[in-house]
Length: 114
Image (cartoon, rainbow, N blue to C red; front, top):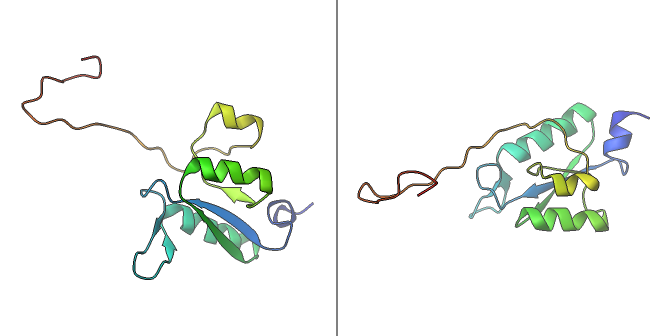
């Protein structure tokens, strides 16, 4: 089986776009057009597979995962979570994100343990 047939069995690659993380995907408020890293990767994958890409937007990652049950997408861009690994196969990460928090200079909080 060809990779394109496996990833886009309908002949079109349906890419779930998680708008819940604006670092990775956004919707332009003026035009409604989707953009960001996830969108660029989906489009490039479609180009390499020589298939059209349909971007399927979701407001949050949980919605993307729930849509798996209705076969609403062919590929998705989600954080690796062991609980989801029973139902989907993860690739190696395409981006690593670090989470931090900020406090005012005068705050007594100086470590996560505080």
